[in-house]
Image (cartoon, rainbow, N blue to C red):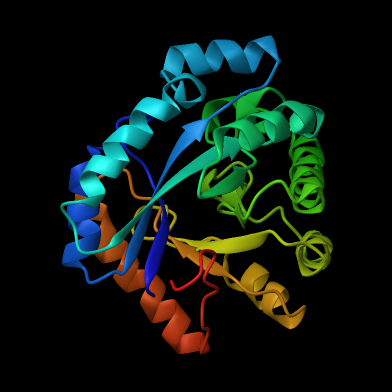
Length: 259
């Protein structure tokens, strides 16, 4: 693993840019991507959530870019100016316009919302009947397929993110995985091996073993991202990803030439 394409800074919900770069350098990476959360949806619910969370990279990316340029001078690694965009099919035009204007080194796409609520909110989804939750899982994978089909992004983040929520865990099927794998096989967008909750209560990487097997069976390559928000997370997550790649004999895809 030469590059961690997916970390966060204080421009969304992470730590100082310099501390994330220091952690990446200390673990021996050649490159790190600062990919803060960003949402440009016209949906009022998402706009209000963005204001409440303080995710305003669409307004601050130029200032962050200046900070990244300054940090680059102090570390022996490549530091990428990237973004993690919330994806909704209805927002494709506005997302494309923003990405064309902003000119990031690369963009990561994420499906974070179902039924207007972040998929992490266990209390909201746990009270729904299991059949309704299955329908929401169907909807999640429909969005994931649409994300791949849109080819707006170089990377697809944590492609089975909903597995982090116990209310959804185990409801995804082989059919879901096959549909997503077929879409990625025909797309320029590369799914990532993401360590976001691999060392916590969930205990697995994204995608989980069954989904990763399906992607590989369809000839889909993967790239790497720790999804770290704190510098102390970088080293252990890199080790976890590297162990998985070595066990499976996977050579990750370099999203940016040379790393």
